[in-house]
Image (cartoon, rainbow, N blue to C red; front, side, top):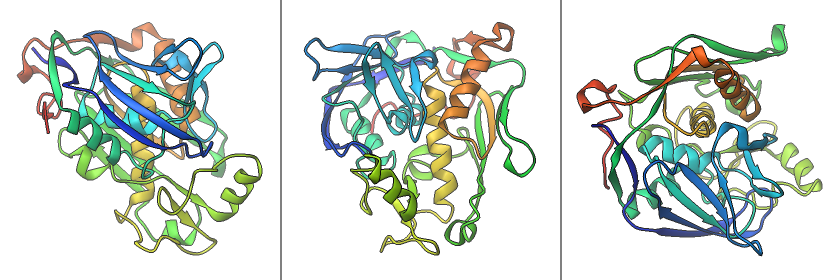
Length: 307
């Protein structure tokens, strides 16, 4: 049986929120089978649980935000991406503020935290959402079009293309394909950092955003070049970060996908629209499990149970 996974023990991190600049403590704890990933705002007078699901997403400006009532957690996508990449099904995430810490701006710190705690299998089958027919969402037309699409595929493959018309971005790879059966998430995707432009950062700070952002947790560019002294971690780091984000955004659906995802200039909003479009068509997907590891697509059974 291809089994669900959680952590062996708890692990903690302290950082700042990218947009709030607030200090935040994060505690990742094991959770029973079939729990899913649940964020818990432990700083509130009465702690509030916010289960991760497509319908929990209430804001997609600059990041993915999930809510229950007035309780929110911003910028969940990098931690969710790490969980998707390592095959973590069940997890409690205790958080002391309303934004996940940005740490180094990628998912690699979360991968380290999860692997350091140890990943263990549970006595319950891992449930996948298998896409049965193509689902697509789009916005704009002509040169302004952006779109995202899911298609049937025995495995999980993501293809993304960006278009920024900026010298620093144009000189790098702008299209990448990552296949879970061939690549290694921690090596190939997780280290890609979020990025921004100085003119946008200045505008966001004037509006009380990006208060925790800087060269130590983001790629920052002026009108011509990357300002980070150490340059890029990957030749195609910009588009790889979009893959990282997409993996996190799509894992908000609550189960790993068996599908081919492709996108052009998509973002958090469109990724969530795509999930909602899929869930709105009951004939477009089914929930499946695998009695034998050998029946599962390569890359899922092969995920390392522990570091």
